[in-house]
Image 1 (tube, rainbow, N blue to C red):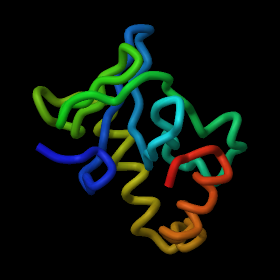
Image 2 (cartoon, helix red, strand yellow; image 1 turned 90 degrees about the vertical axis):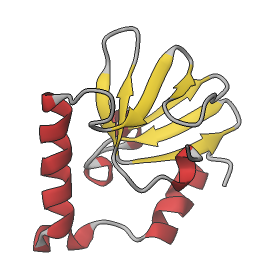
Image 3 (cartoon, rainbow, N blue to C red; image 1 turned 180 degrees about the vertical axis):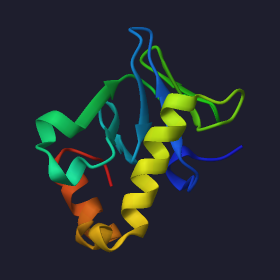
Length: 117
């Protein structure tokens, strides 16, 4: 399949503790994987940036720290995550989404949060 950092399709996170989320962006980190929630730029890093410790494995779905990351809708759809992604996507496509940072600014922020990019 693909390198998780080059995938442009929406990604879904599922963890053993029941956590299920849409991933807005993800980056390699020296301890594992740094990921951002949708609407992360309107919240503090403590609220919207997360680190999963461990070694990223696989080529899709990917596994790390007991969690599984897959392309949203792949291998069975998840209606709750599909709705969350649809809201995020609609925001990005709207006039309101004009305040969303550009790719290089996002990468710079991720580096400040410890991403290895």
